[in-house]
Image 1: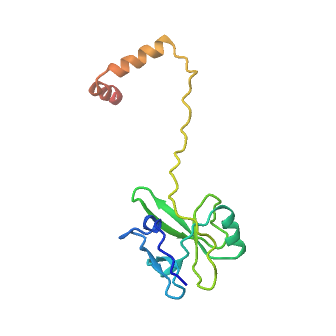
Image 2 (image 1 turned 120 degrees about the vertical axis):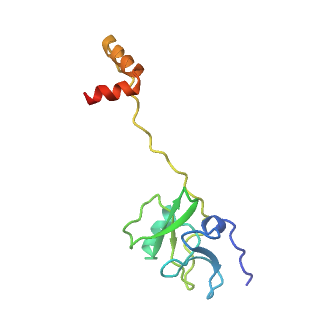
Image 3 (image 1 turned 90 degrees about the vertical axis):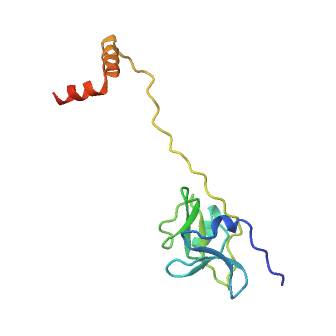
Length: 154
């Protein structure tokens, strides 16, 4: 049986020197590629990303899962264990625990999720200011900071 080549996207998930101690390596038992977490208890995970319908399959098969948490500032992934079906969100990305005797649930390559910015509150456009309020604002705006500090202290 020919050996499968290393998936190219594993370099994104397991870059050299990452803080989560993730390594892409071959399983010693079955020679398939796995993501090995060398932080704390060493565990091996199937590299296929589980999302959507595959997530339902993993829960039904009672496969242990870990959530991939992307850290944008470091541009690295980190793994967070989930307990059974608790802590699982439908929009998350997961890996299943590797078992040489079981087929991987997914072969989907890893792509970091884009950071969604939360929309801000809309700026109210129906503001009506009186002439007196505008004059007061302009007076305060044009007052030097040192004079404002003295006025606050009094």
